[in-house]
Image 1 (tube, rainbow, N blue to C red):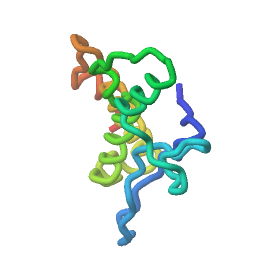
Image 2 (cartoon, rainbow, N blue to C red):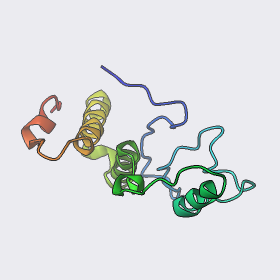
Image 3 (cartoon, rainbow, N blue to C red):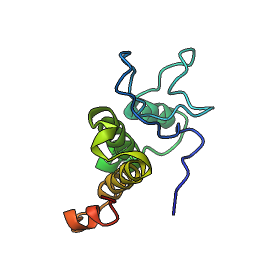
Length: 133
């Protein structure tokens, strides 16, 4: 089953080893309406200062916890996939349709690995199941 990317993520493109231009990795989505890519919006306030400003308006101050600073697993997975696409040449996965299949399978397993919980594991056998030789 193939998953489609959200509209704010670009599609996965192949790496062209013959290109000599350096391009930046896209690890954060640039969705319409988000302030991540626009320069004319004011910078976001730290969480503490925004909570203090809410205290002045009569809102209850919320206690911060460690998960408030966590990075979403989708962002971690996007970063890992982008790094692998830059570092590993396409020839590593194979030639033709089998190579594309193997690359897609490995990148899908990266996402699967990132989403694992504390006591879950992913064996090398599980990663290799479905690879075409």
